[in-house]
Length: 112
Image (cartoon, one colour):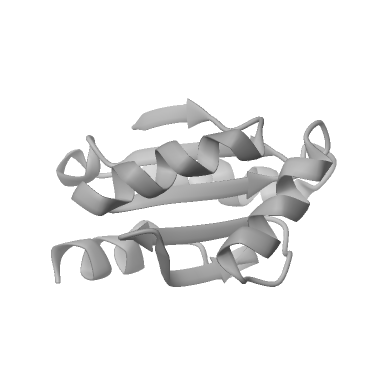
């Protein structure tokens, strides 16, 4: 899993540039939520070698609340936690939350 930490809205430019070449994921995680911890653990456990290069921008939304709010504004998605946002060419291709977060759906979308 190619995990990168998302802490600042200034990183959106990098994320958008990366997503011009390949898919990118933003994972919004609440360190205070058991469901969020389960979703993150499940995602890591089920991650597939075919997705190994896919960048996953991990956002601790408790620690970086203003960045979390900026994600919602910049990408035009409602705030949820946990939340997975799949981007391509700087645009949201898919977003899901809670128990909807799973590797199978990501693989289907990324592999077409």
